Image 1 (cartoon, rainbow, N blue to C red):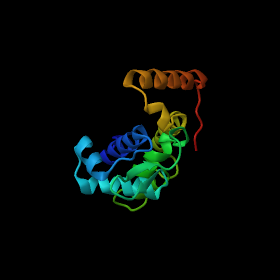
Image 2: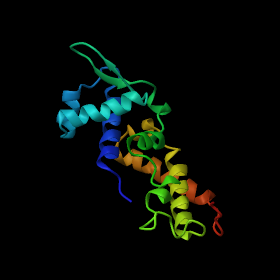
Image 3: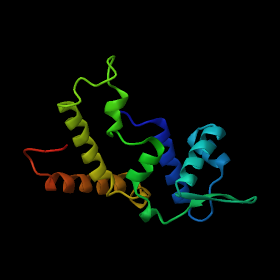
Image 4: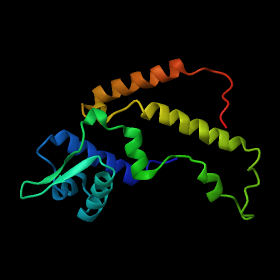
Length: 163
């Protein structure tokens, strides 16, 4: 499992826009500060705008601003817009093998593993808003660590029945 460049840079761009407040950030500024081509920065801001996370402001001093408060922007949803889920049911259809029908479609313990991982990631990321990431790395790290510890504390060890 890998975090794609699109997910990483898209989230970084969204965070940069959130930190700018109402002054807005231009494509040129995003491109320069993130070390991206203007075309790639434009592609990512377009995805974020279409998804309703940012608005563009026209004019000489224009740029991109958040469309809603940072506390209302769920990181899990943003990552899914930028790259999708780690696992979804169509995954099994996309990788059936040479027979065009998965040989494990009826009894697949691996599918249970991917579902468990996706559920765990979703539960953790659903608790994180863009506002949680605006602070310093240390402050955000402490907050995220406490969220992880809460999740682990409430997880029930033993059988996990995911179907």
